[in-house]
Length: 567
Image 1 (cartoon, helix red, strand yellow):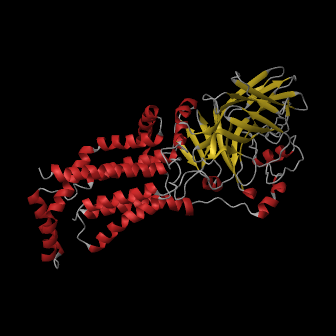
Image 2 (cartoon, helix red, strand yellow; image 1 turned 45 degrees about the vertical axis):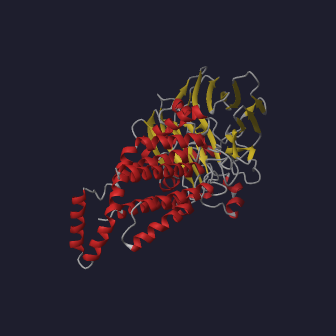
Image 3 (cartoon, one colour; image 1 turned 180 degrees about the vertical axis):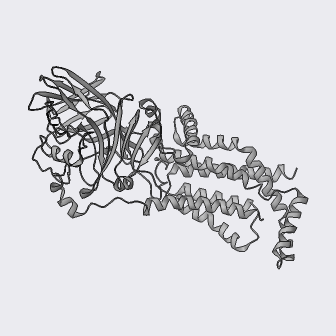
């Protein structure tokens, strides 16, 4: 077996991995485009209340019928706005500029003030939530539709996300020295049951406390089920480099099943209905997420819905057990809503498993330690680019002995290559005898034909894990390195790093024994060019890792070939 054939397979495997990413990005499940007809039908779709979940003991028809009779405004919205809207409440903190609509008390618009949309637009923040087409993404909560039971005089009327709340002010701002900002919205049933929805924003935090207080001022029992949900359309991400695939869609977490993706195609195929205690539900995208986290001790029925007529997706939870508030009593229900970047140290503290929304894939058990080390180095050097360089050096030191064995094997193969060529010419008509002669040669010279490949195979999972760390970590988003590289999460604007990567790959090939097969030799010569083209569209941080790794490999291979093997 020739030394270069396994190396060729490894290189092709990496190319296939990159091609798969590109295919997922360009030809995988794509967002359904918002046609002119869909936009024109937006007003008509407002009559559809199928995104209001039904109560635990109600039918879908009942839920939709009762939701239509809720206290809703008759307004028709404006310019691309799909959901009904009334007046807006503006909330400004040190990290948010948010808008809450009095219809439903929904969180309709969220700007992340510390995250510019691009490095060349520092004053234009990322808009994570928005109620306008095509990129609709909102957070909603309320009470499920209920039906009056025969012979039951309990009260069931309650607000959902189509009900009109009353607010005390239309602007709230977190003042200097103020750590918390509360926004109250009030809705009262005809019978006199008061519902207060309170948003509690905290300085420096993306976690919002959302309380629903039920104040039963009547002498009759009130009963109902609280729901919290996220609703969005599927759109192409603007914060992801070309040829790079990242997941956008729903995820849920439970102590039993752990982290589970509920993608948009799953929601189209069937509705999710599952009772979970101690879990959470989220809609995630590259770098950012929105997640509802209910009390860990309360059972929730997780659900999903696909609103077909205007291509919306709903993922949420409702209380599995019916809530009951006796006449003259009051009860407060508290949930948490995280809306912001996937900061791993913060997600760890918010809820179990929430850090898994940083989607490192199957190799997360390798990726997470790599990120911890990278973050630790960054704390000392203060620059993510130099942190990547130092981490690459550290990884090379860890795998030094494996690489040494690989390079020794390659050097020995280069030494006997003329004799291998002679054997190939001698037994050109008898492949079996040629293979036997090669095996005898390997045995006599104490050469392992796979000795140069196995150490590389061991390192491939680490490379792939680090690929996801550099791709998924929001901490490196728009982080500068030096000179022309001012955004590690975007492609090199001048293609200098990809060119350096191609040059170092070409030098590495020259240090290795050339394949005896002419076709294999031509393919190997093409690989530096192919990789250079691919990496031209990759984030600069990834290319920097590859350049440093190749440079260190060249230095190590040169040293071993020149001094160790000859000695």
